[in-house]
Image 1 (cartoon, rainbow, N blue to C red):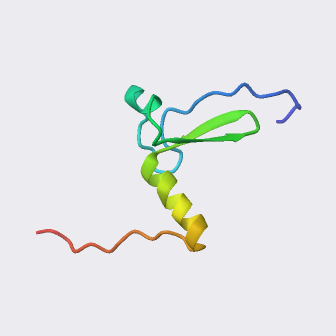
Image 2 (cartoon, rainbow, N blue to C red):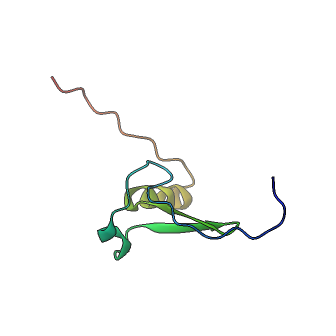
Length: 71
């Protein structure tokens, strides 16, 4: 229930898209992007950030490549 009180920003410790864990070494790097909605900060890893930027630029969703099965 939303009572109108501000929500304290809290970082999530994994990518909200693929659930890749965010390690302490990732905190100092620039690969991860942060998203801020209603006072909550969520994090997206570098590969998912790049895929999302490509989707924006190309105007089409990124689809995983079909790879042959290995024996």
